[in-house]
Image: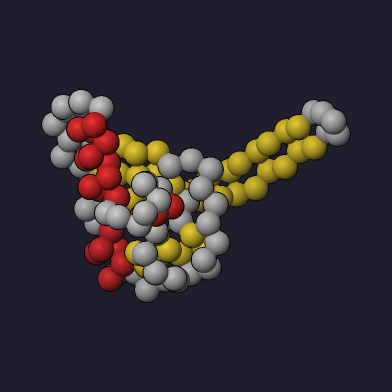
Length: 111
């Protein structure tokens, strides 16, 4: 398996109009798009394109139409004439948690 969980910490400071600081622990998933169906079948609390404690929906990270995310990435590579020999696509992102989505950033890694 190439997919994994990264633990992290978010900090934020605001100085105006009122000083404010927050710090909290979080995590992100690094999902190998070729493994998404394996993860769906092998991890009971994780689902692909359906509700669970942790869920990954293609429409949260790609074209927003719910289509296959890997196909969307490959289509964009062609659209922008990127002709690298990409053999693996990974995505660093937040999953939905109990159906709630918060996607501040989705990072695609093309290997």
